[in-house]
Image (tube, rainbow, N blue to C red; front, top):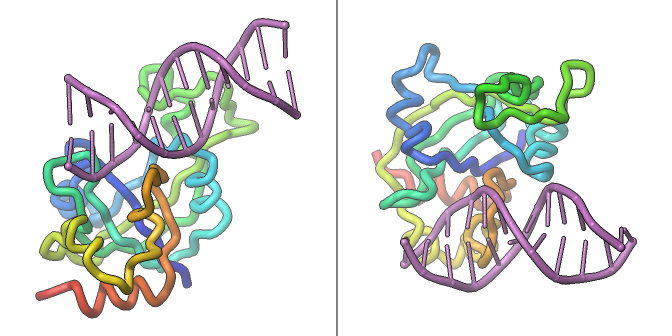
Length: 154
DNA sequence: GCCAACGTTGGC
DNA sequence: GCCAACGTTGGC
Protein backbone atom coordinates (compact mmCIF):
# COMPACT_ATOMS: atom_id res chain seq x y z
CA UNK A 1 0.00 0.00 0.00
CA UNK A 2 1.49 3.26 -1.14
CA UNK A 3 0.40 6.86 -1.17
CA UNK A 4 0.49 9.42 -3.96
CA UNK A 5 -0.24 12.99 -4.81
CA UNK A 6 -1.66 13.40 -8.31
CA UNK A 7 -2.11 16.77 -9.97
CA UNK A 8 -5.01 17.62 -12.20
CA UNK A 9 -5.89 20.92 -13.76
CA UNK A 10 -9.46 21.70 -12.72
CA UNK A 11 -10.21 23.06 -16.18
CA UNK A 12 -9.35 19.57 -17.44
CA UNK A 13 -10.74 17.37 -14.66
CA UNK A 14 -11.74 18.89 -11.33
CA UNK A 15 -12.82 17.04 -8.22
CA UNK A 16 -16.43 17.83 -9.14
CA UNK A 17 -15.88 16.46 -12.63
CA UNK A 18 -14.55 13.27 -11.06
CA UNK A 19 -17.55 13.07 -8.73
CA UNK A 20 -19.89 13.33 -11.72
CA UNK A 21 -18.32 10.49 -13.71
CA UNK A 22 -19.70 6.95 -13.82
CA UNK A 23 -18.29 5.04 -10.82
CA UNK A 24 -16.65 8.34 -9.90
CA UNK A 25 -13.53 7.04 -11.58
CA UNK A 26 -11.30 8.27 -14.36
CA UNK A 27 -8.41 7.05 -16.49
CA UNK A 28 -5.36 9.15 -15.61
CA UNK A 29 -4.42 9.63 -19.25
CA UNK A 30 -2.08 12.20 -20.73
CA UNK A 31 0.96 11.75 -18.51
CA UNK A 32 3.99 12.27 -20.76
CA UNK A 33 6.79 12.21 -18.25
CA UNK A 34 8.78 9.04 -17.72
CA UNK A 35 9.16 9.36 -13.97
CA UNK A 36 5.44 9.86 -13.49
CA UNK A 37 4.72 7.02 -15.92
CA UNK A 38 7.02 4.70 -14.02
CA UNK A 39 5.28 5.46 -10.75
CA UNK A 40 1.98 4.42 -12.31
CA UNK A 41 3.29 1.43 -14.25
CA UNK A 42 5.75 0.00 -11.77
CA UNK A 43 4.64 1.00 -8.33
CA UNK A 44 0.94 1.69 -8.07
CA UNK A 45 -1.33 -0.97 -6.68
CA UNK A 46 -5.08 -1.32 -6.31
CA UNK A 47 -6.26 0.63 -3.30
CA UNK A 48 -3.23 2.93 -3.07
CA UNK A 49 -4.18 6.26 -1.51
CA UNK A 50 -4.30 9.33 -3.72
CA UNK A 51 -4.46 13.00 -2.85
CA UNK A 52 -6.30 14.68 -5.72
CA UNK A 53 -4.55 18.00 -6.23
CA UNK A 54 -5.78 20.99 -8.24
CA UNK A 55 -2.88 22.60 -10.10
CA UNK A 56 -2.42 25.53 -12.45
CA UNK A 57 -5.50 27.31 -11.15
CA UNK A 58 -6.61 30.13 -8.91
CA UNK A 59 -6.64 28.06 -5.73
CA UNK A 60 -4.05 25.30 -5.94
CA UNK A 61 -4.35 22.63 -3.27
CA UNK A 62 -5.69 19.24 -2.27
CA UNK A 63 -9.31 18.96 -3.31
CA UNK A 64 -10.12 15.38 -2.46
CA UNK A 65 -9.13 11.87 -1.45
CA UNK A 66 -9.09 9.15 -4.06
CA UNK A 67 -7.67 5.69 -4.64
CA UNK A 68 -6.13 3.65 -7.40
CA UNK A 69 -8.87 1.39 -8.79
CA UNK A 70 -7.20 -0.13 -11.88
CA UNK A 71 -3.60 -1.13 -12.49
CA UNK A 72 -1.64 0.57 -15.24
CA UNK A 73 -2.53 -0.23 -18.87
CA UNK A 74 -1.58 1.53 -22.13
CA UNK A 75 -2.89 5.10 -22.37
CA UNK A 76 -5.22 5.04 -25.36
CA UNK A 77 -4.67 8.70 -26.22
CA UNK A 78 -1.11 7.95 -27.38
CA UNK A 79 -2.54 6.10 -30.40
CA UNK A 80 -5.10 8.75 -31.35
CA UNK A 81 -3.83 11.20 -33.99
CA UNK A 82 -6.58 13.65 -33.07
CA UNK A 83 -5.57 13.76 -29.41
CA UNK A 84 -3.22 16.36 -28.07
CA UNK A 85 -1.53 13.50 -26.28
CA UNK A 86 -0.86 11.59 -29.51
CA UNK A 87 2.62 10.11 -29.67
CA UNK A 88 3.68 9.06 -33.18
CA UNK A 89 6.47 6.92 -31.76
CA UNK A 90 4.11 4.75 -29.73
CA UNK A 91 2.67 1.57 -31.18
CA UNK A 92 0.21 -0.97 -29.85
CA UNK A 93 3.05 -3.51 -29.81
CA UNK A 94 5.33 -1.20 -27.84
CA UNK A 95 3.25 1.40 -26.04
CA UNK A 96 5.20 4.19 -24.36
CA UNK A 97 2.60 5.62 -22.01
CA UNK A 98 0.49 3.99 -19.34
CA UNK A 99 -2.18 5.09 -16.95
CA UNK A 100 -4.00 3.78 -13.92
CA UNK A 101 -7.63 4.52 -13.09
CA UNK A 102 -8.41 6.66 -10.08
CA UNK A 103 -11.66 6.63 -8.11
CA UNK A 104 -13.02 9.26 -5.78
CA UNK A 105 -13.16 8.40 -2.10
CA UNK A 106 -14.38 11.78 -0.91
CA UNK A 107 -14.28 15.42 -1.75
CA UNK A 108 -12.83 17.54 1.02
CA UNK A 109 -12.66 21.21 1.90
CA UNK A 110 -9.72 22.46 -0.15
CA UNK A 111 -6.39 22.29 1.65
CA UNK A 112 -4.66 25.21 0.01
CA UNK A 113 -1.05 25.07 -1.09
CA UNK A 114 -0.11 27.91 1.24
CA UNK A 115 -1.62 25.98 4.15
CA UNK A 116 0.39 22.88 3.25
CA UNK A 117 3.53 25.00 3.30
CA UNK A 118 2.85 26.11 6.86
CA UNK A 119 3.12 22.65 8.43
CA UNK A 120 6.61 21.53 9.42
CA UNK A 121 5.37 17.93 9.18
CA UNK A 122 5.15 18.43 5.43
CA UNK A 123 8.42 20.26 4.91
CA UNK A 124 9.84 17.44 2.81
CA UNK A 125 6.83 16.79 0.60
CA UNK A 126 7.98 16.47 -3.00
CA UNK A 127 5.25 18.70 -4.36
CA UNK A 128 6.29 21.53 -2.07
CA UNK A 129 9.92 21.51 -3.11
CA UNK A 130 11.20 24.36 -5.17
CA UNK A 131 11.10 23.73 -8.86
CA UNK A 132 9.18 20.49 -8.61
CA UNK A 133 6.97 19.92 -11.61
CA UNK A 134 6.22 16.23 -11.42
CA UNK A 135 2.50 15.62 -11.78
CA UNK A 136 2.65 12.43 -9.73
CA UNK A 137 4.74 12.16 -6.58
CA UNK A 138 4.97 9.56 -3.82
CA UNK A 139 3.96 10.55 -0.30
CA UNK A 140 5.50 9.29 2.91
CA UNK A 141 2.96 7.32 4.95
CA UNK A 142 3.53 9.89 7.71
CA UNK A 143 2.65 12.72 5.32
CA UNK A 144 -0.46 10.89 4.19
CA UNK A 145 -1.49 10.23 7.76
CA UNK A 146 -0.92 13.83 8.82
CA UNK A 147 -2.87 15.25 5.92
CA UNK A 148 -5.78 12.83 6.07
CA UNK A 149 -6.16 12.93 9.84
CA UNK A 150 -5.14 16.46 10.80
CA UNK A 151 -5.93 18.60 7.77
CA UNK A 152 -9.12 17.01 6.48
CA UNK A 153 -12.18 18.45 8.16
CA UNK A 154 -15.68 17.13 7.75
C1' DG B 1 27.25 11.22 -25.07
C1' DC B 2 27.47 16.33 -24.57
C1' DC B 3 24.90 20.34 -24.27
C1' DA B 4 22.33 24.36 -26.30
C1' DA B 5 17.88 25.27 -27.66
C1' DC B 6 13.37 24.64 -26.99
C1' DG B 7 8.93 23.37 -24.80
C1' DT B 8 6.25 22.70 -20.64
C1' DT B 9 4.84 23.24 -15.92
C1' DG B 10 2.65 25.75 -12.53
C1' DG B 11 2.88 29.28 -8.84
C1' DC B 12 2.45 33.92 -8.62
C1' DG C 1 0.72 36.51 -18.73
C1' DC C 2 5.37 36.27 -16.60
C1' DC C 3 9.14 33.54 -15.77
C1' DA C 4 12.08 30.15 -13.07
C1' DA C 5 12.91 25.53 -13.20
C1' DC C 6 13.34 21.46 -15.38
C1' DG C 7 12.78 17.66 -19.04
C1' DT C 8 13.43 16.50 -23.82
C1' DT C 9 15.31 16.86 -28.33
C1' DG C 10 18.63 16.63 -31.76
C1' DG C 11 22.95 18.29 -33.98
C1' DC C 12 27.53 17.43 -33.59
